[in-house]
Amino acid sequence: MLELPEEGSLVAQHSLFDELDAQASGVSAPPRRRESRPDARERAAWEAWKARLLPGFVAPYCQASRLHRSCWWVDGLAAGRSQRGESGSAAFADTADALAASGFTLHGARLEASKASDKAPESAGTNGANPIPEQQPGAQRNGRSTSGPQSLAAAGALAAPTTETLTPLPREALLTTLGLGPAILLLNPFATPKLSAEELVSLGQRQAPTELLLTISVAQLEHVATQDLAGPLTPEAGGQDRPDSPPALTALLRSDTWKTVWTGPGKSAEKVRRTLELLRGMLKAHFLYVCVATLDDLPTAAPRRLLLFASRHYPSVALLNDFLCAEQARLARERETQALQGSWFARRRETARAAAWAALKEELHALGRLRRARLWPDLKPLLVLDHFGQFSTADHDAALLELLREGRIACRWSPAAPPADAGASNEAPPVERVPGPQDFLEFLEARTRPVWRR
Image 1: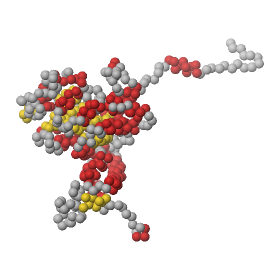
Image 2: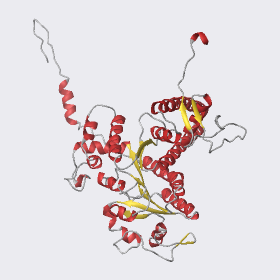
Image 3: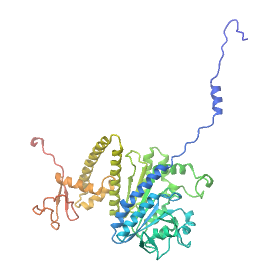
């Protein structure tokens, strides 16, 4: 029994920190947070977009070609993965058949990693020296008699009885296989193995028309940057095959400037934008036009899927721009149809569209006065590049026509092309006629009337 002292009281002190320390010692450390990687839903979105890209951009691009009657389609979206996109293969087969009906041949190849080069000749039915099928005079595809080089996908399908219509192609044999023919390359720069600057430069130095489409996943880019900053991993831990190889972003951008971007302050979206600017600067030395567009289904401040397009010809930029604008409009209509209050979302989109349309007209007028532009074909490409994937080429023509009707732009129509109305004079702008290369524009300054004259 506890005895109390005669002149005082007993004070018992109990420490709570000892129990907390004991509990903490028995609990393990919290698990390390895993970096975000592209999931199955994102891969499915890329595959669905690729299936729409073939009839929406590849087919018009091939039909508009006048010097060439064949083109290459290289699918490097899923390079290094064993998965096969059935939707992309079916879309390629349909596009190739539609072009073959008009006398145009579309060759198809599925880009694979270097380690698959040993298996590619067996699956493609070759002798091991060349991964592309040789000529087969008796090849038949959908009832048409074709030759080997004119129907590469058909020869590969006959040699390997699979559902794939794209011939497996190792990355080291890409330039040799393409030769001097035009090519459209859909590549993922962060596939396995990742692309390097030397590979992109070699594609940019081709003498033939080359359209380069780089699919950028923001989650994948963040993962690669975080992994490269942490240091190279060992091959057992899933790192690179060569420990002495440079980081993936360093090999892609040819510099370590990206480390300053990702270690500095700022949000992730700003870091991604600055990294893409570095990639655009590297491609600008070999491509005349390098554009970036957003491919998200929902308009967000921080996009998750981006497309970097590089080309030497403006008609290719205009074709892809119209395709992207049509895709965005189609996705918006689908969202509004499936939404519970679709009419409210439609009105909100129309309000935002009207504000963007007014800003486009003001930018057009200001740019014309700043550059003292006289011809619309010289001014229009600048606006299309600035608003790539936002306004179609027809939208830019409509904005110019509105400015003409408002009297903010005057046009001196060429006498060689008479107006649509026989009774109208050449001084008046014809109805629904876009100024051509022989019609001179004059951007008028807005002059406000004095107060006493109003």
